[in-house]
Image (cartoon, rainbow, N blue to C red; front, top):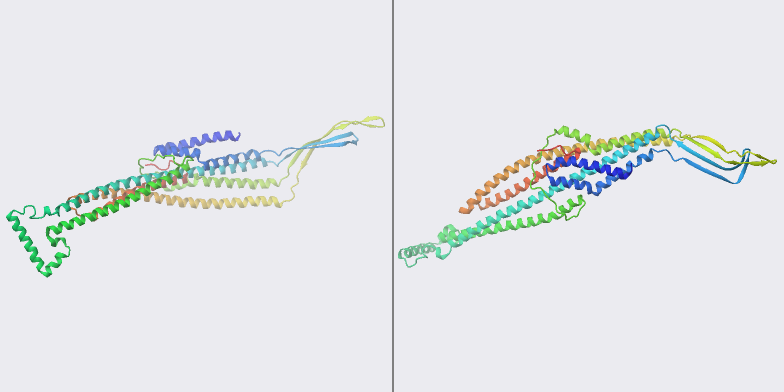
Length: 487
């Protein structure tokens, strides 16, 4: 089977495997499943790993074939007189045969190395799937942060309108036309009242001690006029503080919008397409949880992880190399034929000889220099030991990643429940506080504080949901499976 045919068959296998993954992933999100298929088909790193595997497969027929036969031709410029006649040439054909089992062992070793390269391809594909999922989830989080920030900006703008209404109301109440006694100066009773009030204010001003507090700016000591002026200043400060918060959110929103470009470029680079190609994001992500036991999942990782399978294939390949080293120390057998054409020669006027000669030949190599064969065996043995230690270290690393991912998944689940509940409470509290503020102007500090808490809880909720999906994607990558989790 040539490389092109193997390439076609392998792509069929790739499509079947991706279809299996997509069947489960489509239930989660159709867009993500489609992007995974596109990435598997187009990503250059995955393609490079695939062609490395194909190249290693082509080595199997190379090492499993006999050595090329040797043909030697010799022609005499002047025929050589021999008893059988005049020899014109000497033609030899020889075929060497390795020791019994050598070709089979070589093919086995090459097949194991090809299997190791195949597992590297699988690992590259799984890592690509994780990177695509992770980047897609980060894009979802960014879009949700933009949406939440825009909604929070609307809340602040509504609060700003409430503060402006209160400030304008305070300005109207402090105008001269609304002062007591100013609307009907011709009315005697009101004029008397006004005069009495002015007299009282004048008597108060003649008292040194009482004039101090009144002039200190305390609105309550200045009567209705002072209270209205104080309320107007407070309303204006509320408006200014809200506008400060709005400016902060507008700057945050601009920065979030700027973050879209590099994330979009990173995602499209994984799919090997135009960096500005639009990306479709999910409307919402649901919670995810394990339905596999934790220890059973760890067993699945140690059995199915491509890196462990690759190391197992390498260990088997070095075992075959050790066997090959022993067989290399065996003799090689050769079988051939020697053909010598003769022409008749004349001796004493008589024609003699002229019959061609065919001579079967057998050859045998004598491997007497044993050090190199012992060194070949020792080299393969040491490499096998290195692979065993490397596999042990990889198992430890995978167990650590498994433990951290389980912790992250459970922590993200707890945070999701917490922040969903906290978000609901903060929304209720903010509605009550804004109603209270719109009616009597009280609790402005609490309104701003709860509004900031609501924004923080909503952002943390989105982060927790995304962290859940990221932890699930990492566990699926470790176990080389897409069906370990569902909700």
